[in-house]
Length: 90
Image (tube, rainbow, N blue to C red; front, side, top):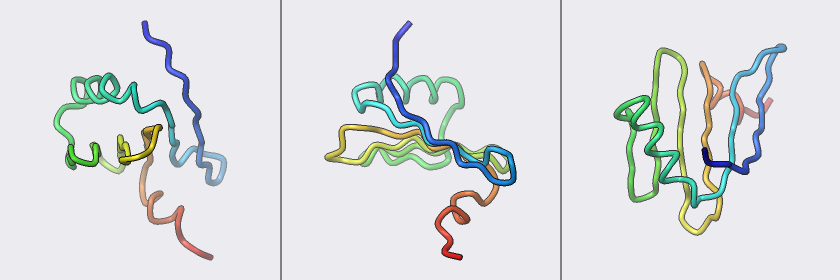
C-alpha cells in the first residue's frame, strides 16, 4: 500500500457536494494515471503533453491534470454544470 499526502477542497452547494479537488505530489501522477486508466478506461480527453486526462459518465466528470513547472498535480471531480458555475461572477 502506498501512502499519499494530499490536500482536498470540497465544493458545496445547498448542503450537497458539487465537486472536490484533490491536490498531490506530481511524483505520484504515474501511479494515479495508471489506476484511473485501468479502472475507468480510455478518457474522453487525453493530452499527454500537458498530462490531462478527463473521464465522463452521465453528468459526472473527473479530470486528472499536471501543469508543467508545477510540483503538484490535481484530480478534480464534479457533477452537472459545476465547472461553469464555480467561475460565474454574480
